[in-house]
Length: 285
Image (cartoon, rainbow, N blue to C red; front, side, top):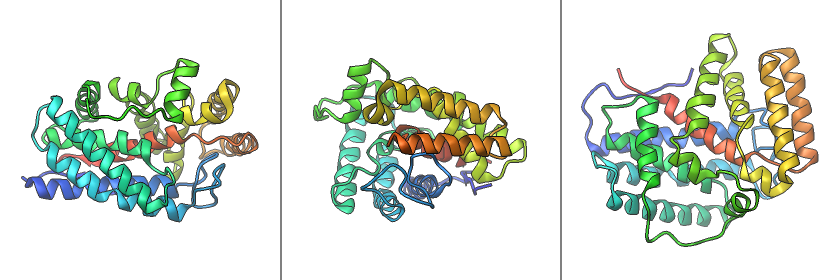
């Protein structure tokens, strides 16, 4: 099991920010390296992506360490108000620009900056309250506040949200990350309890998200038929006992083959898995 972030002693704001930044960065790297993930970059291949590699994903994650550090530092013991929301937005946009410069303009972790950034900030707001539900609720309060300085960019994700009338990353955060709390984390713990390896448990957690998430990355590439196929395929793997079983492995292989044939990648689910790994590693003793 991965090492957790323990906050048993009194830490300064700088010490906590450094630990949170390291934990968030490692969660992104571990998500990128995790295999086998259908349609996604992993340690085997670039999945359905032509412009992404594992090396690029790792470099992108490491470029965000300073962003997570600043988010934690500026959120230290602060209430969820407009001032904090605007600061989180400003730092997130600066981090995105730094990431894009590092990747040569390739969008590697834009969605992850949003989800992970909110959760890092939420931990720093009240580091003495580290239950996943409490953290997610604080993150939701930040996400629900308006940011007058946020540019009105029309991304592929927002286009999919509007076209298909589904909730996107913003709604997931404002709702307190239900796909993390209700699906990914319970599945991660359940698979571990049943004796799955750590990598198998993490893939199972990804699949749990994929069973119901209206992943705008999938919708943008393949529309509703592709999304329905992902939901059904992921559910079938878990119903077969998950990726630690032979039947589950075979069904995962079939799901991956179909997603690669359709050129779709569950990038939204991957972002939430990385955030799940972060929450799983934040603990108090």
